[in-house]
Image 1 (tube, helix red, strand yellow):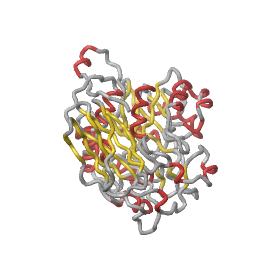
Image 2 (cartoon, rainbow, N blue to C red):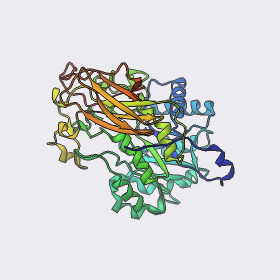
Image 3 (tube, helix red, strand yellow):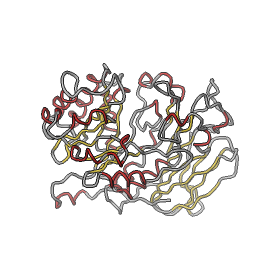
Image 4 (cartoon, helix red, strand yellow):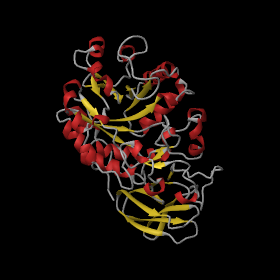
Length: 440
């Protein structure tokens, strides 16, 4: 259980030197925005800003015909909003039609030169910020004095080259300004620690560090002949935000805003056509918007605020809606090894827990109660600030009710939560390892 205290003291900015502060990004898969208009982007930007997010990292892949239009729409919306919300690129070298060309039409250079001067492009220390998803085969393109920098000028380059491992990054430190680790989910039936973050932070000492925070990971469709996977999500959302206080990274990247196929989306579903077709059955009626509710508090604490007012009691809660053994795995494996080929025999049901996971943001000490169906409620002692717990199903089914009780009186109680059923409700009989997320 961790207590958090938010809200930044903006007046301090008047007395501090002009240096870049900590920044929180959300990772947006542009390939999943084909139905977006400029207005849709404006809605996403408004929701993200309200949650305390500073900028979108736009993941763009080669060969996607939607990318030019949607990047243009995104910048038009952010420029028009003129509210301080920013955008930056993450060039995806592992998806799409292949690795990004450094120069030419539809290249790294062409995108950076077209957008780096937009009012909404994110600058760090007055330099355009840019990242990648992998790309270790193209490290030389980003070298100091190399092809990209010669054509674009100064860049604040923070790549994700996680596949190199902390021991393999040393040769490239002179060509990067910071580093982003994609290692943000646990392996096997364990909870994620911050050990890998601390290892990366040490390995890139003297450079800035961007830490990944993600709530879940269920790769429902598989890819490139590989099976579908599920990682242990469970307590991950609460745990990773607590770990940002221990790691103290320069940047945080939330993964993701809209990757529905991997089930770690925290943004809204605007149009079902933007969900990969094979994933729709797992995503339909499984909202994740409530994962944003506590972000202003988590982010303010990460940025250094320690004494907030808390205006009201709130809770958020998430769970899969049937025991994992209540359906067939349908080829889903548990992710327990960094080598996907080694995961062929790992049981998905051994990785995830049958439990409800819930956090409470309390104005003062109170009891938090969880009742599943007609079973007796279970009480937990909460303190002022953010608290987090989990409660196993223990064979119980029904609609969970979450309540805050203070001085013997129920202050608030949930309504409209999703029922936990004894077996999968999918017509296929497959287990849905996605999370249903709610709040009050």
